[in-house]
Each structure stands twice: as structure tokens, then as C-alpha cells.
Length: 104
Image: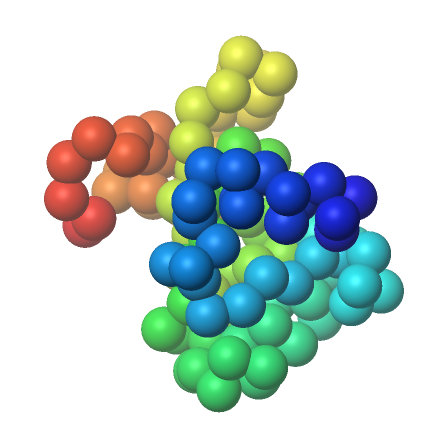
């Protein structure tokens, strides 16, 4: 998976725009574990409050939020039945989030 991720980023000429690429496989942590987000903030030398997650999963949004990150939930039909949970977790400015427009 890490090789596929990097290949996709290279193919779309996005890799030069990034300071680093970290995958759960390489870090040995799952996206549902708050330790992943804590570890990433530390590796990037950032305060968790300066980090942002954009995701569609309530589980991953909750984990990042528990680690002190700002979270924005992107609507996905897979999680339509959990929209109230995402709204409660992210607040009205964080769900539903669209990449069209300014970041609140």
C-alpha cells in the first residue's frame, strides 16, 4: 500500500508539494487509534491543535479529535446513517464539509 500511495502521488505530480508521506502500514498504527494522530503531530513537530483531518469516517474523526486535532467530515453515502454522529462530533462548521470554499 505505501508504494501504491507514493505512485499515485507521483503520477498526479503531488509528491513535491508534500513535506512527507506517512502511512498506517509504515507507522504500525491504525486510523482509529488516537496514537496515530499524536505520532504524526510529533513527527511533523506540530501541536495537535495545528493539525487538521478531513475524513468521512466517524471513527477516524473521533480518534483524531481525541488526539487534539481539528476534524472536518466530508459527506459519504456510506456514512449517511451516521450523519447525526458526524454533526455532533464536528459541529456545524465541520460537517458537512466541502472542499469548495474557505476553511472555517
